[in-house]
Length: 251
Ligand SMILES: C[S@@+](CC[C@H](N)C(=O)[O-])C[C@H]1O[C@@H](n2cnc3c(N)ncnc32)[C@H](O)[C@@H]1O
Picture 1 (cartoon, rainbow, N blue to C red):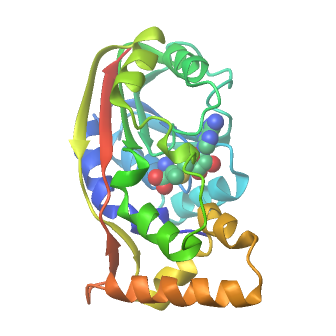
Picture 2: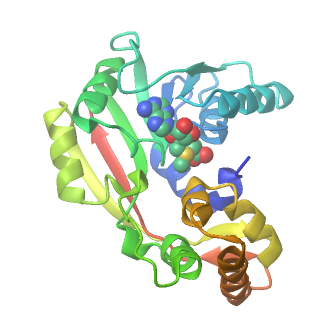
């Protein structure tokens, strides 16, 4: 399973600082994946709780396993589509997401639904990716694997890349005090080129790029990928530049 916790460690620290979870908070973590941010929030909300929701059952199985192992009692995980799930109304005092809110088919409906779950005055704190061409982790990998083939950049990961659009979506969904800050941190893909290659092969983006290639083309593409990954090996792991928006708003 792709290790988002390792990839996003630098962003994790930025989100934690911005979220500033309080002891009594009731936190909703949207698209929580394996739940690192949910568990982290639960630890801070000692007299409160944290609920992580995701559409991926395997991710949530891993989240539960890690929570049990770490002995965190005030955290729960539910398989739920955040766009439509009937959350209890006015329940949560803080909404949180680390790159889990960019995949909605109808962002307006999704954020309206999330807004209903938040108590009036509650904060929503999210990290979302900036545009594709500001993400070295995406451009370098695509360039290496796709070579001169045209490639689609319509990946859902960049659906909230335009801050004006994001601000409008949140405003229409009933949020106020929308602030969008530029955050730039490197992302980690592995201890060396081989480790980074193995991690990348787990990503849908990479699987899609390799899907139509025959054996010879695949071999050349992987050679180019390894050359590129070697060039990004800093000696302390393979890192790429990236850019995100830290989006905060109030219900
Ligand atoms: C890039 S991953 C981030 C996971 C996690 N927040 C982290 O930082 O490790 C995006 C996550 O959003 C989840 N997701 C996508 N659409 C969703 C939806 N409509 N409702 C809930 N989760 C969703 C995916 O299953 C995936 O786990």
